[in-house]
Structures are given as structure tokens and as C-alpha cells.
Image (cartoon, rainbow over all chains, first blue to last red; front, side):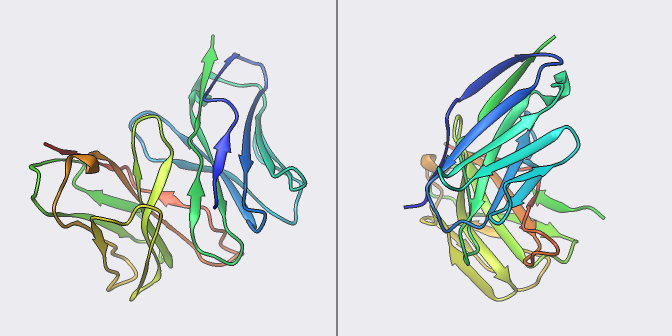
Length: 112
Length: 115
């Protein structure tokens, strides 16, 4: 069945370093992928998305990479800041369907 | 433009009680969904709707009902609350076309405790 999983439950980085958060997905028919950021006590917030016909998409300080061959998704955050500390979720939308399925999340700690 | 509004923010229920979690959005989004989030876990889809009058089950629909009589509102009903339904509930909405994207806007959540 569909599943979206993350390789690491926690990630600790030094302020100013780059962060890489990884995600594996199992549904090869998924055609849309999204990264969300969730701060404590708040709802998830959209960060960046990518469609299955793309390999890479860049935003402000964030880049999402998609490797369909190995069904892997990553979120890169450049020059990580204390405000980036949060839980990050990847999510996938199945091909032709309407459901968006979330992974378990990775907690990012930024050390000053 | 308020986005997605959820009420109440906190609720304590006794086992067997019923209640409705309210969700409203003012962005004219077609898609709306309800998720629950348990400690240390991701968000699990309860029910979703692709437009007024259309709803469908997600991953964990048992014990919950939904309806979508208008584009703006998508209430979630707990029929007979159980301790296993203690969780944080999020409502979300999104566009349904590639031009608008499918990324969700989430509400701030309802923290429900069933005792």
C-alpha cells in the first residue's frame, strides 16, 4: 500500500550549515510531493512542492530534489537558522487520486 | 482573509459523548480534509472532500462522520467518543487544479481529550 517514510526522526545542525531532510515514498504513481513545516503548537505550513515531471525545484533558501528511480525525496535548507527549528513532513498525492498522505516527520534542531 | 478556521481549539469529552469539530475556509478551495496527529506520528487522513456534496474516507475513518453542504464548511462529527480518539485534529483545504497547486492550508488545530 501507499506509505511515505522518513530516514531519520531527528536532525541536529549548526546554525549557518545546510540541512538535508530525506523522505522515501512507495507509490510510484504519486505525481505531486509537498514539504511542510510544523512549529510547536501550530498547524503544518506549506514550504515547497514538486511535480513528478521535475527533478528539482528551488525556493527561498529551500530546494526539493526528487529521484523517481529510487522513490526518494529530499529537502535542502541553506544556511539553516534558529527559526528553521521545527518538524518537517513530506507528503505525497497519489497519481490521479485526491488523497494526500503524510510521512511521520523529522524534527530539526538548530544549534546556535 | 482568515484562511482555515477551526473551532474549538481545546475540548475535553467523556467516553460516549458526541461532538462536532467545526472547520471553515474563505479561500474558495475545492478540497478539504481532516487529519489527526498523534504524538510522534505524522498526520493521518480521516475524511476528505473534493467539493460540496462529495466526501470520501481516508486512512482512519472509523468513528467519524463528515458532510460538505457548502464549499466553505467541512464539519467533523465524533459519533461516540473513545479514549483512542484523543488527538490533535487538523482541518486543511487546497485548490484542486495544477495552476492553483495542491498544497494545503491548515487550520491551527483542535486538541481533543477523551476521558
